[in-house]
Length: 339
Figure 1 (cartoon, helix red, strand yellow):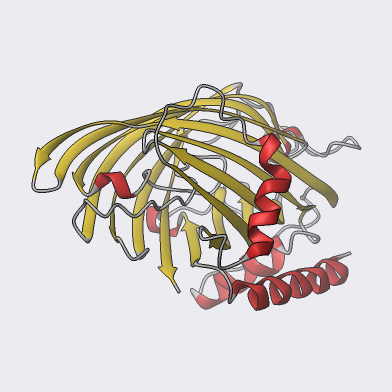
Figure 2: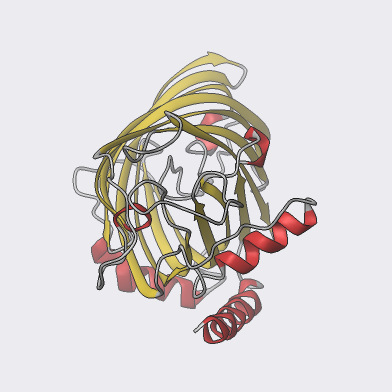
């Protein structure tokens, strides 16, 4: 299974990278808890995607957007200009581990199991009147320790850092296919101070469903900066705060912009496979908390040509009853470049 997954991942990324030459932007997100000097719970993740926001340059992306448009619920949108984008998630991975993952001996029902989520997919988004952003996302892939390549990636990363490799000893989720569908809506309310500076608030609502994650969410991001009309705040790997990797160049705004931001997202969680255990068989699991929240703070810099760099610090509340600490921290770095 592991060998098959590796081959599939190679084919997928090669295909998407070849098509990515027609994309308008490439986006890379990397996340890790090493900066918080921990190695537990959500310990690392990455996501490589290609964004198409000029369908006249790529008719295939425009056709793909039209095909899934019915899933993009935009009811109640304000009047004004419309901007659309199609994002192809080339390859992404999340890795989850128990606390002190080099012990080798773990207690079922107390220690969360090792697990990973290796996936591809797409998202579509539409901005209306620069005041509302709706998005729909589909992810498909493999869950488990071997199929997700989590063990291989985690061990390699530890080796690079000169750290001991995780000792799994079979304490991991079984392999299974995964699917996730998500819909989100965001609004933007702001006040301008002059010379391009201003403040805004971006409240959001969303629903995610699938055998990997199922939850409802509500949150808000507050920003201070310049040329804020150009972006929709930070994008971290799901589950978490998301600006849909959306960049909307504004000819009336300064060429260079930035923002300092802070906010929160609350989630009512009905399923988290990395805590509840496998879907189609009984096995390792812990008692999940039904309410989880993230606090996020950071900064981003961007320009009207499509370049963006964002650094976020995320503090996630307790996710299961036997979690050693009341929270977990990690950093998220996002980079976007327009071709």
